[in-house]
Length: 234
Image (cartoon, rainbow, N blue to C red):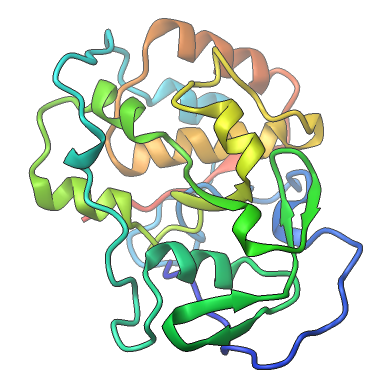
């Protein structure tokens, strides 16, 4: 499913106090984790336990990792809008649309950071997080990826979960940690976090190590209604 970009706004709107539905706790029907169930190529909904069971288990391998192996940010979905992938994601996830001026400079607007349930009113305080961090992707590649595939992951807007706008503080806290090492401070987001993590790994055919799998299984015990739907990446 392709991430939809909002029309660029040229006037500031009032701050919304409530969180957008996309960042609420998972409902009994699919907690999105890669693609909508009706999207071309999307898999049927899986329970979180079933999805975790489909993850290949392998020892991680960090040797040789460099962040610049994953080219980002590129020109985004719309090469003519002046916004790179990072700013397109920020625009697409705004609760209140910011003003957009030349060079895709963003002023005003508001966002809900799902990791820590904070309202952010300054785009400069947002990071766009790779839901599965780039170092973790490298660790989990089952065979070395091409440069083109790594760039495709690093700028993936065809899934609503690969990239997510969050507070800079929460993203720095997460760093390159997996769910065995870090979880969002907002406990109400844990089920959605687990589903999105597993769905992203399945989408990109990434492995998980044993500690990571056990942490995900522990989360799944508290998420009986959470489902995972993903579309394999091209």
